[in-house]
Image (tube, rainbow over all chains, first blue to last red; front, side, top):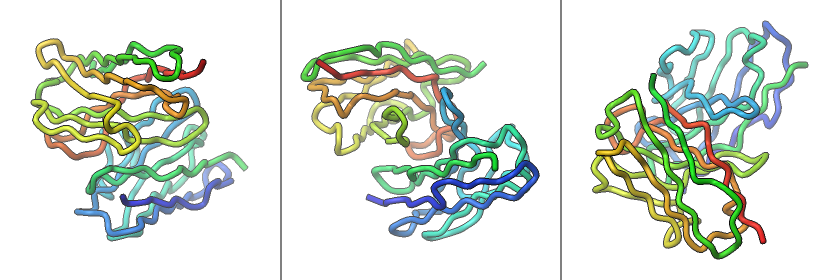
Length: 108
Length: 121
């Protein structure tokens, strides 16, 4: 099973700042099948990025994904008030598909 | 509108059974693999099980293998999760999720609102 480790656990930033979230895999993610989700309290997760760098429908271009192999990054170029949430990475290239433990982006 | 609506959650004693349902609408349900993902209160996401468009391919997390059974009825646009021998550690919100592409594996672009399962005596 591929273990995904996200860092940092919590990111304290101000609106307008840049957020950089990391997701490291215990082994190479097949075909760079890596996704990112945003989850707010009491809501289901929302897909942001799939295939490492493709934005899902309706996702603003301030969200971008990059990486390959075992190291992946989600970048939010300028934080908007609605971006403060928990973010999860997921690999779906190998069975079982697995999620990272999450990074909370909180208002500083 | 593309939508997934789960139902069937509730409070159940350890060792008992529960069947979750997920009603799909707004897309060609029969074209897509579907999955169940759960989230214990205050915890992260855990993939539970997935089923291909025609039910020909099925997979489970080790934590539920032999106890849970996933199935689907394309005529009814519905996904199911039969949960037997429930344990307290199965307590979680259970989400059904649609794969973004018409293959077995993919990111989940549509999620239901979740249904809560509590296993406790």
